[in-house]
Amino acid sequence: MSTTDPTARFGINSFSLVGRRVLVTGGTRGIGAAIACGIAAVGGDVLITGFGDDDAGSDTLAKCRQHDVRASAMEIDMSRPPTDWLDEFIVAVDEQLPGIDCIVNNAGMFGEPGFLDVTAPTYDKTMNLNVAAGYFITQAFSRRWIQSHVRGRVVFTGSINGQLSEPGHSVYDTSKGAVAAMVRSLCVALAPHGIRVNSMAPGLIRTPLTEMVFRDNHSESWMKRHTPNGKVPSADACVGATIFLLSDAADHIHGQTLMVDGGMSAWQQPDPPRREDSSPG
Image (cartoon, rainbow, N blue to C red):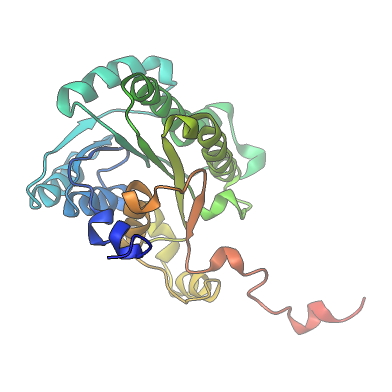
């Protein structure tokens, strides 16, 4: 077989995560749970974190273990400042799943008042969970990876809100914009050490956190209209992109944000102007 044949290097096994040990934060439900189950399905061991959701975590663990991999979970509130929990967390991770060599920084939240009513505690809680937690978890593991010559892999869950904004989500938008910038900066810092950092950024996905969007048919219709492929999928839509970015097939991909949004971020203005808005005034 020719060495230039792409199947020689990137066959089906290139997407396998057998032998990998993956930390998935926010992995008890929604996008994180789907990712954790997907990782298990391609052979990776997983440790998921969550907070206040024991039933969902147990269900996710059961699904992961169906694939005959090692799977465990821990509860932790990462919306606090990392100085309050990080050291203890790293010790607990080593006890439950030693040898972590991949991280999916998925834990996140949104839900806030309008910009003029945002308080400092609300801002801090969102930024701690959506930005600081992933930053300092990645830092802690990167230090040991570099010392041990481990070619670690990190995927952040970004969002289309890191690129496009909404008037009611100023703190969330700010946090996801920070994630996009952080991925680029960590790439520059860590790629020389063989550590890959990328982001998977969904558009609107059906999860427990987005249930409010689908309370009426008008909202769902509006979202589909603003997505070129006309779909608002389940969290499973995020799994393949994340596995790819963790896998050997993405070996030369560093510092990138892969949009998983049905084309929403590519569409400048889905709605044509109304007749009364287009008339000269």
